Length: 229
Image (cartoon, rainbow, N blue to C red; front, side, top):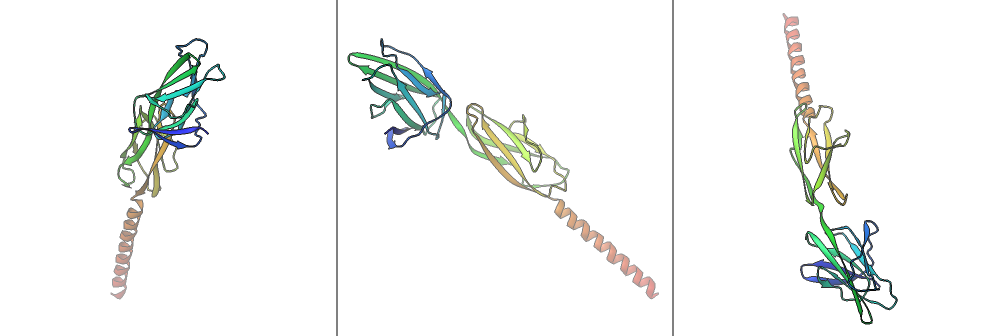
């Protein structure tokens, strides 16, 4: 059974399961022994909180393997390790040692560590006036960075404006939704944030109807007085 580890500040904590990352794998070869030629198969990047795995292979039958992540050795002498990084560090160093008899060979690879997007939120008023521009901002925790795109109501998705977006609603919008999409620039992982927006057209309409009703009542009153006279 493959071993699954969580890499944290307190070391490697052993659990069990099979967690495989199916994309982004790359072979790296750095050897210090002859004939064994170990190769590390690992992704170019991992994201904090997202399961991943590494594997070490060598051209031998009776080899023993030792895998370590940032200097922390996996307990089992297995050639593959599934793991989850639960804190941020710029890079994660994977090392594999292969032993056969008196021969020892090693290989290492650095993996970039990413964060997010997480904690995505929109800042701005949820009550707007028609024909009046309002600016919103979107915030997310991302490493190395995130790009943002926006959608207001049934309108098109708008990108290239960064994390700040301006809208000018009409009275027809009434109640609608503002959506911000934050996307990690390296991994492509994305998260949506939404905010319900109310446009003051309904309030204005009610006020207008009230004014019209007052005018009608006044007109009827004048006609009544004239008829009486």
